[in-house]
Each structure stands twice: as C-alpha cells, then as structure tokens.
Image 1: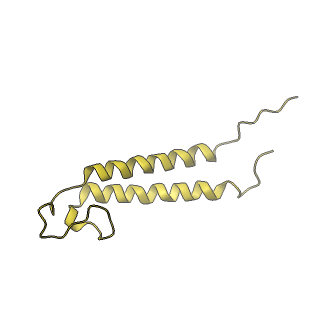
Image 2: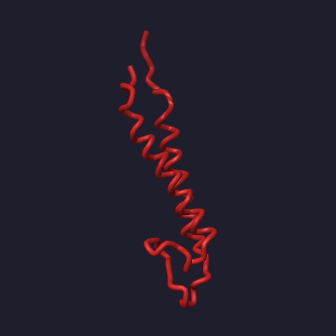
Length: 87
C-alpha cells in the first residue's frame, strides 16, 4: 500500500510553496535595480553606490533554478507510487 493520506503531502506542499516564493525572488532580481532590492537580499546596495542601477541577473537565474528544482521535487513526489505487486 502507499503512504497514509497526509504523510507525503507536507513536504510536497513545502516544496511547492518554496518554489513560488523563489519565483517571486527571481522576478525581483530581474526587475528591480540593486538599490531597490529589500535590504536583506544579497546584492542590495545604497542608492548612492556606483552599482545602484545594476540588475543582479545571476542571482535571478540562481533563484529561478532553485525554484524549478523545488517544483520538480514536488511534482515527482506527488505522483503515484511505482511499487509493483507480485501476483
């Protein structure tokens, strides 16, 4: 038999939620300049800095890659079990 209902759904839900949050983070890195990023984001600089108008594309790509990995984890772990029964 498979897992009882609810045992495997928590990690899948957490992975899907993390993927959604990381998509938002990636979008912020692509759209906002470094001075407009939230101060707790890596790459944030003050408005007077020389890199204030720089977009952190590599950070956005990294966040997007991790988001896709989280979605892949959720997808593969939410499917039916591949156990074979012997007749």
